[in-house]
Length: 466
Image (cartoon, rainbow, N blue to C red):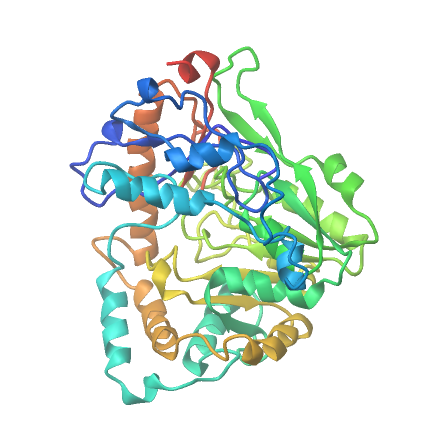
């Protein structure tokens, strides 16, 4: 990631509510490069600085991090036979990555001792109706063979039905929906079908680090547009604040070579909800570049735990002064979330990407999808049979059965989606309280909308030196 940040905490506390977040292990997060390779150690890495609540990188990793010189004896990176895809990622990489190192540290200490806030997956079971749907699919003999490469018929029909409501337009299930192996592959396939070598892609910084290398694999060049951090109190170094998209910063980096903008809202890693005004800024910029599309990554759309407030501060739920109805682009079945594709003129310029993993706490299901105009989706359809032929038929069928069940009352809530939001709200408040008591600055969710399972905490110098 090009822009470092202090501490991004995932709201993935154990389902065991007895585990106190104040005793959760905090991982020291070294800086890393765009290939996700660790490039320097965190401060305070000596054995004397090791505490019961801090896990340090391994000695082999620290040895690797201390070696700033290129290893001329390593023949792998100079091997002329490596393929172009590997070259685009900077050659064969050595040593651990952020993901493997965090996994190693979590395993070393033990899951019963810590809450691993370093990797984005839940440690609790999916809802029972989803597991039951998977069992039902597994006992159906018809679901054990290949299915349609573009997406299992029952699933694309269900997705089209839902997105017709989300986007307030009729979605053609066979021509405007593509099912992939997770949202990551949906992004990969989209980039492969819209980019040529030398094309540029706008990334709002900070960003999910997977984006950079997927752009490079497609031959593209990432162009960074930093989000501007505006603290609540500029005189308080521990004050949190808002991340803001600056129109001038975006427009200054747009060019005839810009072929895509990746929009991620709710945003990883800040938890930011892009405002309606910011989405208008993006739409206006895209309007000046006819060949540019927006790739809208919306995997956290059902985890908007602090929806944007109504612009009219004096509105209420009373008949005398009611609040306005849905904002432009806001889904009627996804509270607080604006679908970029539903903005005027943007459907034909947008590929909307999502998946089941975050929504149903089933990241191992690995079913994602693209929704968009047939001119863009058809390109993905063309590539799919040559990549993996089809996503799991079993899981696609299970998801098709699960989606309508999620709309039904669940655990005392109006629907599973309402339950999910409240669950993450409780986890957010629990973790936020622990971080605040430890001296970190976190967003005030009465002032700052938030979503996903991220808290980007600000660390002042005094807290950092403890």
